[in-house]
Image (cartoon, rainbow, N blue to C red; front, side):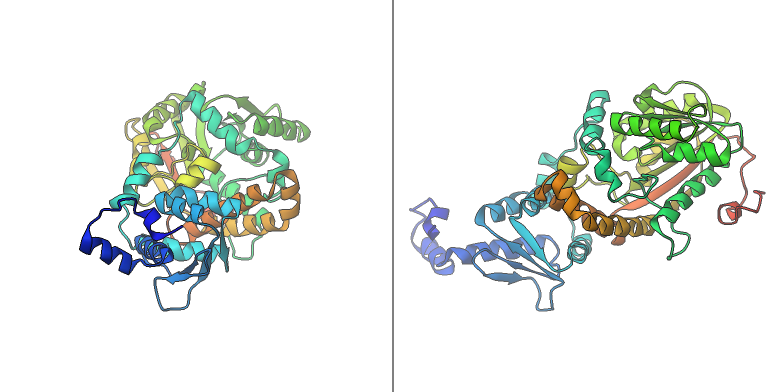
Length: 427
């Protein structure tokens, strides 16, 4: 490829053409210039980029955290056009690689981005115009959930805990194992809901069913759990049957919008990300008609401090329809329905720790996962888990637990003491 092939206009005219030819006598100088511009758009992270020609570009003289290797020109120009989408595709295919710790590389990029305005300019336009999330209508939600959760229970068993918890754990101590932390998370939720034997609970989005079983087994409640992932529902029903809890836990393969009945408590863990902000008021109405006059609820969700779209690659390839809300956006669930917000807790660092465990287990199962799928799938999910870890550790993502109740419910604990000392009854 010569320089003129990038500039089809042969008659640019005298001085301008001479200046272009002089400045860009080598095509790689153009590509290096474009690469420097892209690093500038990213906030000049402390990384070094290496082109397929061996040419290196850095935005700083400081030692880089890692090096990104761009293996061909096609991947490079796709990266320039839409980095949010095409970096993930190129990394998955092996057209782009990272030398160094992948999590540290991503943390470096995210920290640089956080200090750089991203709302305007070319990349902001690309993100808002071409990287829109898929809808969460009844049919759309079913497709979105199928894409992520129905790829095989055996796959998730390789790197989740024994209870198959695919949401943020709660680490009461830094030495807690993943299994201990996931059980602690379920107890943390149950104590926040102040569950009592004989009560009824409705769960929206129950995953593989472990929270519903935990509530029934250890808190004496009856649970009706809704989920539109067929594979998860089949798995959950089998586990409930084996545990002898089918009479107290019912798994319903249906959309949360079709919840019927009246319950003492509502709980949703890791489902709100799939709802979409346009459906928040409808969700509030569902909760309102489902709770008894003395009812209360808890929503556990990935969130953000600032409203913005999900990373385009994750939304398109891994988690379609996903949108982590801000606390302000979540108000549209509670305020129109007249609920009082009782407690808000951010478990961001607990999710970073959870992802450390998941990523370590995922890497240990690399060979088995490759045999199940292929190396491109493994690279894609490695990037997804590493990117999620980096997002929580740098504050790009948050993890909100919001407790709410009917506005005149007065028999709630006055302090948080019962959350941390189970033997102490609530005031």
